[in-house]
Length: 446
Image (tube, rainbow, N blue to C red):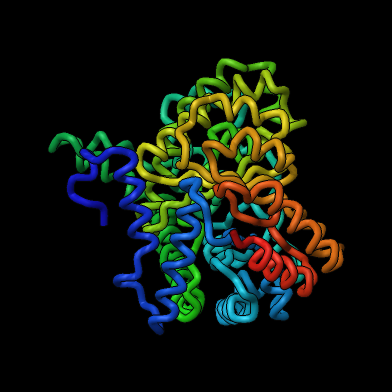
């Protein structure tokens, strides 16, 4: 719950309130006082890194996808559809490895997607073999001639046009009436007529069914949380998600081919669309952080990477709207936690010189030069990442040890650093993961 005077608080006060709630132990179901103490210590260490303070040791973060399932002998399909096995895999992973924070794995609610008929991904154990990872289905789910409709009413267009295309069970939402019909007594019955039409009733029933299936999945996650947090004292580092406006547009609406062509054919409409999506992206992150009680909102960055667009196009199409999202989140006490996929070597100066406030953001880099990132971000932002995912699978323990020490030497001095793989681990050698955790814990001490 937010304080009653929330709207009168400064951004710093909001941030401290959210961080205090996340790091606090009161009201959380810890199995032992030791678990509570471990939780508090680990949470405070990440907060210190965020605020660019000197640390007793480097916080160790681990990104996982399919790997916890592989480790426990549970298939990707079972992670999606057998929640008992999902809980088993998560519990085994958390208990067997010496972690600082809980992990997220590719354990999403397959039954929910099936009930909605989700077309944007192919799922293991359904459209794919049970031993495959889920796959994104690239496409133009928004037509080029629909920019004006999106810009005029993003929520309405998403509900009535986009959702029926990617969630066939919700096709009836195309008949959803406008809510202005609730503003006068004679309007209400005419507005309600649409809710009697069978396709809309079927869509509402599908949403209700999917909601109950989601609760089933959340209940299973609660069982896993009783071990990761309650027993082991592992804080969760992610409280929700949002995206850069350009990525909402380029990933799942226009698609890669569509958005690349639109930069040349309809540049002004692209700019208007990403600007229009800014408040939605802010609301998404703020709502998630408030609902979860965790202020860290993960923002995966996709189409702003080096090689996708020129620096000039990044400065024109990608960064301005994204910066607005970051400032909007920060103003509400939310911590944007960027997952900077690919390389951002040509973006560092643009971001570093943009005037973002110090001690308010976290940047997890994939293939970016960490020495340059430390040089250009280190005075104002917490950074991490860059340990290659390939090293976890194809490297040796000796190579892992050398790399971990090198990146700590490069980035850890003066604080503001957490160690992390540069990408999600789908496959790994157990001994390399253990080496990563052990060396980072011992060598990362101040």
